[in-house]
Image (tube, rainbow, N blue to C red; front, side):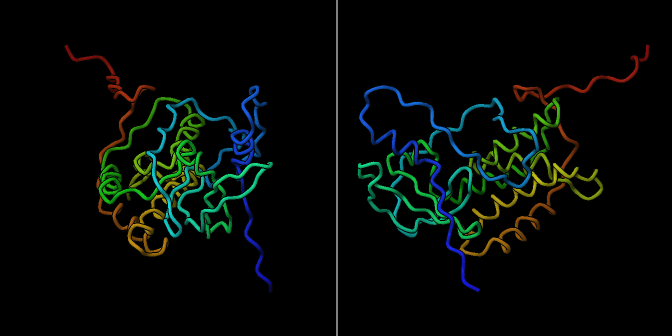
Length: 245
């Protein structure tokens, strides 16, 4: 059976054309295609939650063969960097392949930083993310639909610390209530992202990294979850009944 060709996704194509065109007047707002539905996507929640914007990635130089992280797609590999002509203008593009999704993404070098493209996390940063998993879950006093949106935004930020927060908050130890179906989907999506970056750092495959991560979580014994307000401050539990006189 012949192998299907890789699908080429160019989410920044409109941005490429706008960057290449002379700055005569503001370009009309580009109409982007809806991104592919990620595991854990909640039906009816197409809008982005109002949370702090993702910090711009530090300026980095990329080379062929580098493993990189694109916020909404996770870990990929730089296949090549080439100059191509788009709309009559020559632009330098980074071709990133995502083998698991059989997809190629083209990111303009000039837009890589603002798009959040980065190299793999340092070992220290990733270890800090793993250490974060040991903390108690911090659950906001709000509807699940809003929390789910915030969790998805953290996963799509590409930040290992933010993704670790999702795993920390949704992980269940033995003896704790089971996750709901939607909680499980979002949890698995966050675990998948962490495992993919761990595999690239360790030089192993994602299945091995996922098993290693699952074993690590089994060693963690947590206390009860902590309720927090919208600002992230802990909320004291309300006393039940009246104080004894």
